[in-house]
Length: 297
Image 1 (cartoon, rainbow, N blue to C red):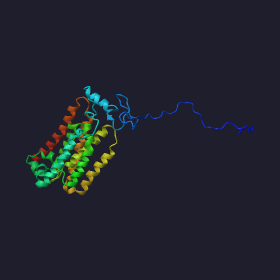
Image 2 (cartoon, rainbow, N blue to C red):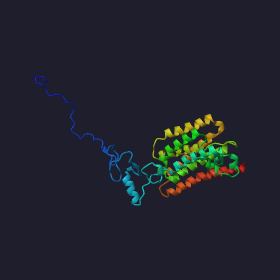
Image 3 (spheres, rainbow, N blue to C red):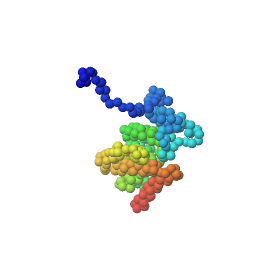
Image 4 (cartoon, rainbow, N blue to C red):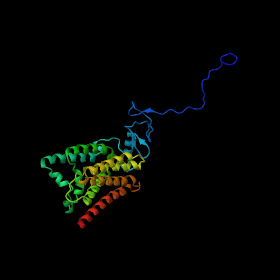
């Protein structure tokens, strides 16, 4: 009400004449119209949902563009040099399923042979000293009891189905080999003679450590991965220090982490060669350490 008694204009708040804030550009995925997304393919520009996103060197690509790149002869690759894949299925992670299957088969055969097969694969210090160096790797196929088998297979599949397609088959084999070999070497060098331990845990922890290295290369937070590794190794050290099983676990972390860093930080120029030499270097260091201990007695 104004001073003259006439009703005055009501206050409606500030008036802005400038442009408003842009609304998020969410559109339905072109392959799954029922899913809204704000991510677009870097090549064709079409909207893609989380299931359709395939990591490219820059941003994401849709499955059709990835297939088109393959057909044109220019295979898209990720930061480690592995070919990009659009699905996580058995065919994309053959080593993961093969190792898990081998654990299961060995466990079943041991039931009928009273552990004969595991005895031929296990890391037995006197036998390694006699020249059976292959046990430093084959002991990774031994898991212990049935409960260990179930846990190891579940973790292996959970991690491997994502990690193996990301790094490629031969790099994935390199991670497993490095983790198992370093774990076996550390146990052989430090643990007293006569100890026998399963080595599958070295492979599992090595995969986790390698995945953490790849995440670190991308600038992701790896504190959760480091905490999990520290808890697993630390718990084994406190509970079973006398068994020296923690040496296998620690070696798996060191070997897998080193392999992951070799794969993640290799320069693009001659990347495959440098990665191969790096993984081979881990094996050479382990074998030299083992041979040195054998020579010393």
